[in-house]
Image (cartoon, rainbow, N blue to C red; front, side, top):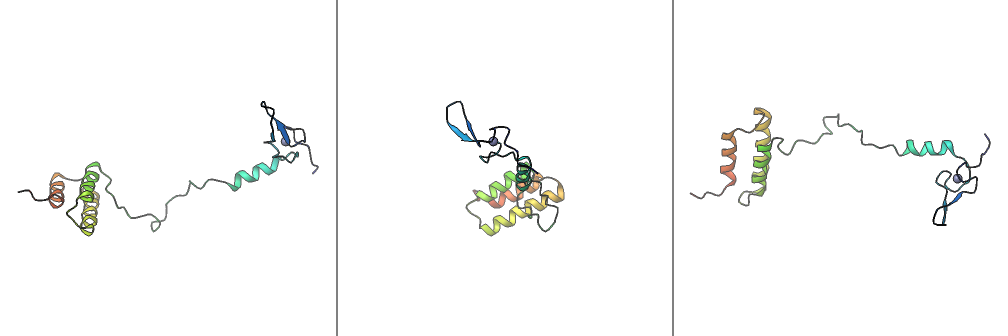
Length: 123
Ligand SMILES: [Zn+2]
């Protein structure tokens, strides 16, 4: 396998751009040698990992937030309520999520029931 000069810069390893500045050749990265295989290795090395799938049940985080619009609004009310403890908030939010998974959505009765707990009694 012989060493061939870079076809882009002609083996200089440098290129002169339109501003008159010389820059490193983007093809051979300044080595002046043709590197057909070198570039390929880099691509496989930096393979993106965004295709990871959360297939393992234990790796998936437990749902901590409602998935329906009503449930989310309710959960925000709970979260922003200054008169209940963090423990109660967590409990109510969990209740919303569980209600959603059972009923598919939040029923009016359920919304009222939760709201009553996060709203200060005004009489
Ligand atoms: Zn070159």
